[in-house]
Length: 477
Image 1 (cartoon, rainbow, N blue to C red):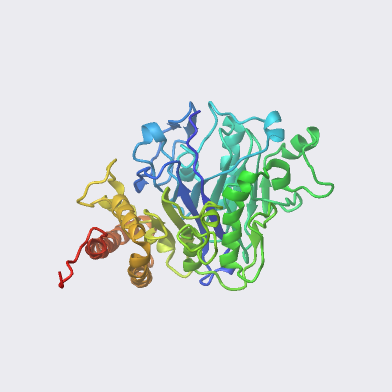
Image 2 (cartoon, rainbow, N blue to C red):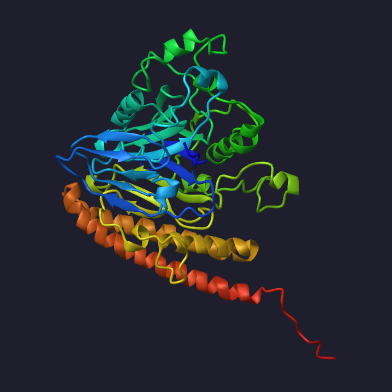
C-alpha cells in the first residue's frame, strides 16, 4: 500500500466542559507535503442503490448499503494519486465524523495481528464507508467496528464521532483490534499521532467499546507489560525518541493551553489523554490549540529561543496543515442549524475558522472548485487562504498585528452571523433548512473573500516598502 498517512492533532470536548453546552470534536489534517489541495463538498443522499466505494491507495473495496444519508467531506483534489481522504463533516442526521489521526503500534502486537495493508480499510475511504450510514456517534463506532472485523485495517487510525450528546474517540491499532472511549461530559482530550487511550474499563460499556476478541488476544500473546490494570497505550503503543520530539510535545502544549495551572513535561510518555479544565472551554480555546506553534515557550519556531530549541519539537500548526476543523453541535440553536463545521483551509496560525452549517447542502463554488495549482484570480478559497498564510509568514513580525486584528474581526462577524442566521431554520427539517442556510452561507463566504483580499493587498503593499533592495542618496554628496 502506498504510504500517504496524515500526521494530525486532535482536541475533543464534552458538552458540560464547554461554555455553551456544545460538543466539540476538532483536528488538524496534516499531510505529507505542504501543498495537497483540498475542496469542500456535499455528497447527496441516495436510495435503493447498493454500491461500493474503493480506495485509491490500496485494493480495498467496501460494499455499501442500498440507502445512504447526505454527508459532507473535504477530499483531495488529486485523489487518483493522493487518495480521496474525505476527512471531516456532518451527515444529515447531525452526526459528525473526523478521520483520521494516524497512530502507530509496537512490533510486539503487530507480530501477532499485522495490518492488512493490501486490502484493508484505510483513511482514503473510511469516511465514505461510514458517515452516510450512522445515526449517532456511538453507532458510528459500532458500524466502523463491524467493517474492521470484515475487511481488516490497513493502518493505525484514530477516528472521531460526535453528536449533540457524545464525543467518541476510536483507535484502530492492528489489523483487527480496536478500542473506543467516550469523552466524559465534563472533560476534554488532546492527542497527536500516539495511541491515546489509557486505562480501559471493560465493566463500563457506556463509556468504552472494543472489538470482541481484544482481551483474549492480549492474554494469549502475553502483551500486557503492566502488573496491574489494562492500559491500552502501554499494551499497543510506542514510546520512542521520535514520539518525544514529534508527538508528546503537542499533547503537552494542548494541556498547557487548556489547563495552564498544571505542570507537565513535553517529553513525558504518560501525559494524560483526558483532563478536566479549570474553566469552561470556548471555541477560541480549541482554535488556539490547533493554530499554535508553542507560543510563549522557547520551542516556538517563530519565537526567540535558541536555534536548537526552536527545532526541538514539531509544532501543532504547520505549513502542511491542509485544513483544520472543529465539528461543533450546539444545543441552543434550532435542530436543523445546530451542527457547524468551523474550517480553516490555510495554515490555521494565520487564517480564520470559517463556519459551515452541517445542513447547508449547497457548497460555495470557491470551496468546491479547487484547481490543482494556484491561480492569481484567487477564486479558490483553498488557494486564497494559503496565499494569505505565505504573505503573513514572510514578514511575520511586521504583519502579525494586522493578521491578528483581521482574525479577531472575523470571529466577531461569524458569531453575529450565526446568531442571525440559525434562527431562520426554526421549525424546519434539515432539507427545508438547507436552502436558507446555503443562501446565507454564500453571502458569508463572499464577505470573507472581500475582507481577505483587502488584507492581502494591504500587506503586499506594506511588504514592498520593506524590501532590502533600497538606497537613499546622501543629500550631502
